[in-house]
Length: 389
Ligand SMILES: [Zn+2]
Image 1 (tube, rainbow, N blue to C red):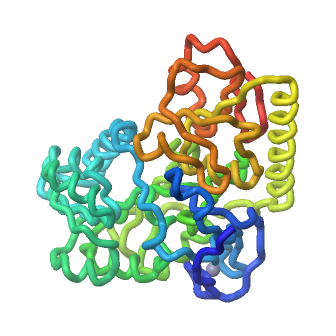
Image 2: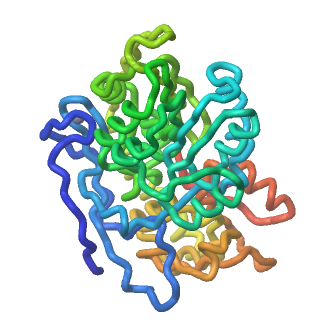
């Protein structure tokens, strides 16, 4: 195994304090988003994947930071997410925006949200670091800056915004102080910050250790978030649970002293980390022993859906082709490739069906089972507890 280069962060991403407790060590892992070509097998690099909690502000975070240039620049398939963002555009227009409002989006993808906002009459500007995706947005008629958002970019924009939006992006940013300084600079005095981010409570409650990967640097809850926003001159006006990634929150914040009433402060209960670790280890033991037993009985097992989250699980459980022969996936970014670290071939779905499918994208269990209505075999759902259905 080749060690990759990474930087060890000594201070908390939110509050700057330097004392942490280690919560969970998932071992050395390759980058979850980098599916390998045949000639790359065995050349992938490994990095420590360990989860820590700040002893001052309680932010749960990674401290071993892979340079962002090394990370695969993944993006959500905007096709499946379009209804979600159409709905968000409606909500924002009903409550907060009017024709002519100026909205800037951090990590604007291919314009999946800005397009419906623009069609409803907002002026929009996207900031998107991935070149080919920024190009897709421009093609769609969405003005887009092809950069990582930071305070410098905020200055360059030059025009104050009524709203800054960031969906599924803040948890992946290392220098959050600089990003929030940029947000503050960009927003009008009455401006709003709207963001959606994976929620720590769901990760813990649903044993979603497979959402821990090197790109996912911070694990948000309100205990750590509220003081962080205050530090940057913002206060929460609404928080809402949403189903994205099987558990996220949508937060709307305003500059301190804005027009809206501040949301009552929410203190979340202390997380029981020992119980969480026990559940993680239990699910590993249960899954591996089930797969071994089935293979011992002569059964054939394939995976379904090679999302990045599959790789954390496969590597942590040490599952290779002796247990799971191949994985079906429809994305051209993945089929024809191999899973990093575990080297399971990813293939385009065909008629050769196994006795068991393990559904790695277990948050889409219903959709996948609907798709495979005629399949006569069984499904293995690996999390929150191992189930065969
Ligand atoms: Zn902290």
